[in-house]
Length: 353
Image (cartoon, rainbow, N blue to C red; front, side, top):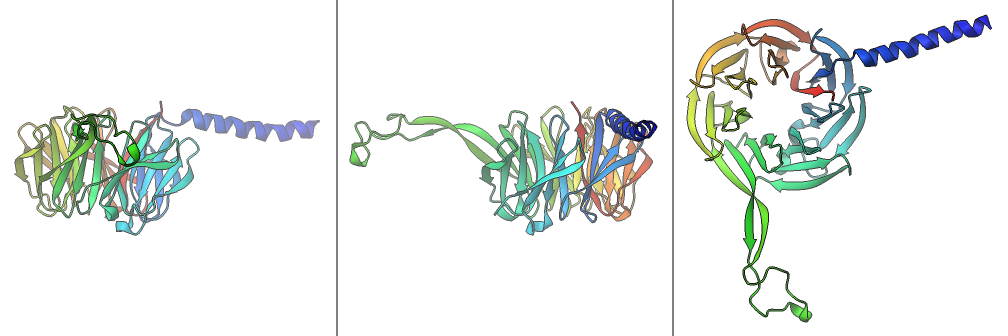
């Protein structure tokens, strides 16, 4: 009997510790990809401690989390060498499965809206949508542009924006009403079959319409202003930023800020500042004056930029240094580093709801 009691104690302890671990996991986790280690780092943003590392396949570049924060989706890019998405369970911190995208090669940019994962596929010059409920890609649209890279999808799923790196363009895509021409009065299809509905006036429906906006060379990272009025684009080859009027779909300003290699851009949550990763520094601009406020040295190279859900800090992936730099957005100073392994880049927030 004593032996039984002694054996039960460690079992109970293990169960309790597992319960406590689950309870103590933060409500929001920072997700950071390591391209060289082919892994996802799950990080506690308060302690800056790596809680878990999950294998996610070859050349992971971008990551997005589901609305409830329980699932992550990773694009396996390889400049068109790979054609998969990796799905991770963020409750157990384990890989769930790999989605074969077939001919949609080079998946990169990701967005999660309407319960579905939207992605770019550079090798196919397309954007697509994956439905977790059916486990299938349920929609594809071609852009006709070279290296369709990053993607934004509106909450209602009616507007899409992509950056097209080698074409030096931004695609603004939206659903608009169209009218298909109807058959002439009295017309009948072969075999006497009645024509489709619509009549002489045609049949009304919606279709996708793409407007191409020429920006700068190497257009890659971009963000939509919090008020939804502007699209700011980082042009890596030109070292400039393009400001697009979202409604009018045209460039209204080009900012020559010497941002060579700039590949990611993010607004702060209040819309007052714009953060641009440019090589060894993070460039901070005033969004209203469109002037540079500060250049913050962060390492030997930079990639992904992410703003904390409460707007207090920004996180910048520094690939050559194998860390993520933590920036205080009040003081505009580096306050810490998170060691995450080789080649950090894509980042996202997982907020448990």
